Image (cartoon, rainbow, N blue to C red; front, side, top):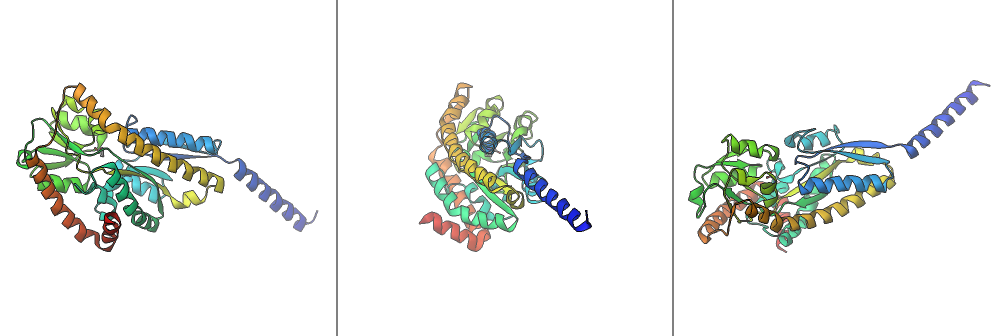
Length: 326
Ligand code: PCA
């Protein structure tokens, strides 16, 4: 056999091998997420992973690493961006300092119910996609937390009652809100909440009924004041080059599972508000409707923060707000 035939056969064998490897190939993706397993967001992601595995007959399986166990919350976005992992979840408002457009949903008193939150996501999504796209990322889907409310040891009737409190925060927007309210912010991730309270690092927080109930807030605070000040979102992002490497049928399965996860996640979130407030109550917390004076004071802070946001968010910010206010 001459060399040419030999190499043709070799090439043919190689092509054949590559094709069959592709058709039968399976990939396992690691997916870091920041919140504990019992969080509805994590539950939703676990279902998303199951859906992808089922729809691709195991061609793509996604292993969920919850509670910041693979990457810390703050590192997840860059881990996906750099391709260390192909997919991950984080609180979108964590990117407030990178670009305010990512954190519009964490602005106090802009969108405080699910209808407005959905409207805001529609307005925000094109800009978020544009910004992620520049970084080689794609937002697969986004799901909101229930409205963010106030957890304290003592009743709070007005903003000045918050003065000096050691206050747990989770992003730059909340930190600003807390500072405007005269309290002292400290960043604490969800898995560390109980410890931060028990060691006295913090003594108050603003978060959803979900995170309040899951972290057994009744062990360290007494009063839940239902201010429902914003409805912030988590986002699941994917590395675009990892996505492009998938077979078309697998890509389609991922997109379909993401669409279903977004719908399911919003429904789960809506169901959480009342059920988790009931759990807070059952465990002895006092559930309080905010006073007019408190709401007036908090809204005034919201107005100042919106003005700051507009200045920082520039043309993209204007585009989002115009679409939202239409
Ligand atoms: N829980 C997360 C983000 C918003 C929420 O409801 C937290 O408290 O960090």
